[in-house]
Image (cartoon, rainbow, N blue to C red):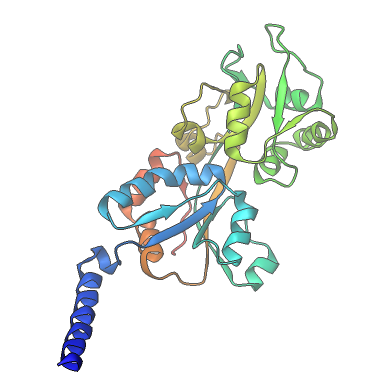
Length: 281
């Protein structure tokens, strides 16, 4: 009798597990967690996508810790600490050798921003060069100007330096000055500029669109940082958005990536400021 009951219970649990796997949306097991990290601007773009996907797949949860940045997220991926990295830079040779695989998704404007009370709405390339070089140290109202930099190796720093030969030299000079504030991540830059009197810096458009802090977003040479102006080639500063995985994904993470590249996912990302330059995942 004991053996018969034990056999019955085993068969019952096997049937139950099989039923749950088919009852879950798209074959996803309830309770699966998708681990993601990356660049702050990229994660800001991803936030509404995670919210929309979570509503359709109630059993799925997302584990998103404090943004690690592109390099930090790739290290975490290689260490099997996350499933997906969303990054703003290409892979290095050693990362590809270790099995990391990058798939392009799109790009978004890198916006020049200031603290809310700065009385400027437009800035020229030449003025930006002079600010970073240290030739301009006050705003038109006489208030001190304070630059918030990103680390020298950061993707945003390299994007600014590609704006012009003069900007490349000016940014390098700014990094050599003592006392200049350096924000490690997109969100730190966003918060530092908004809370620093006379502050100026740069951040990806999705961070601005998803945030609530008061900021002054500048036009560059008369052109506003927007998805449309990026598409027509008039706005010059853009940062890439790519997904990195360790080969082919499975389970919930694979289904989520499919959603991101779907028409519905792309429509959500467009509202977050993304211009698509898609590869197939």
